[in-house]
Image 1: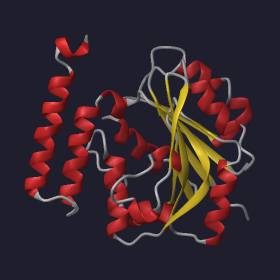
Image 2: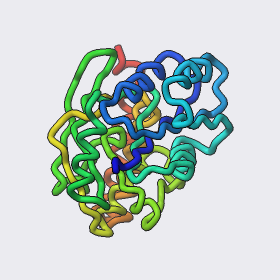
Image 3: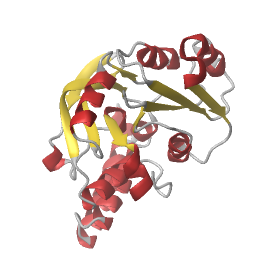
Image 4: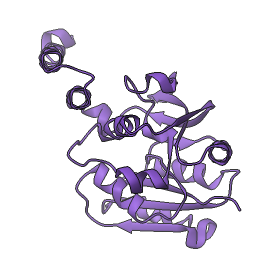
Length: 248
């Protein structure tokens, strides 16, 4: 029997981009999908656009529109409302390749109970700028980005979901938690998702970097001295970068 894959999209006032995201889910070659959309009470046409896809998904589409405590709280809400053996999270301005789920499920059938991820194609201003790929051996230094990851449901049940204490880099903390607990990571040598720079972590990169450093320190990859040196250097960099004279 084909395993059920639960896909989660969180959104707020995403009318400009969410249609492409949903279309990429609807176009998947793999069909046993549950799609959960967690909306933070959008005031634009986001919910209207979502509803146009209900005839395609039917009962497989779950829409929850209510206030939340941030992006990771919304992601956790999606996980709690999911039923799939495999869970993926795709942002409302990102999109999948057509065969992404088929590739993930094939990897899952060979090795259940792990994390499955592929390459992430990144865009800025509509232009492709890079394709991110990190070997499992180096995931503790840099991860690909959660749109390219799919996680066995059993791992969330055993090791927990996103830590809402972190506002910008909780997905990185979760990866380190999995690594610490010796969870196997299986890399797929294909682009599975497309990512648009400009989301929350991109807009707040100063604070995102600081969270990365704190998380690395918490997991023993960075000394206390190294942590504060990086925080000071990070704050100096953004302070100098934002000076009016340097922006001319």
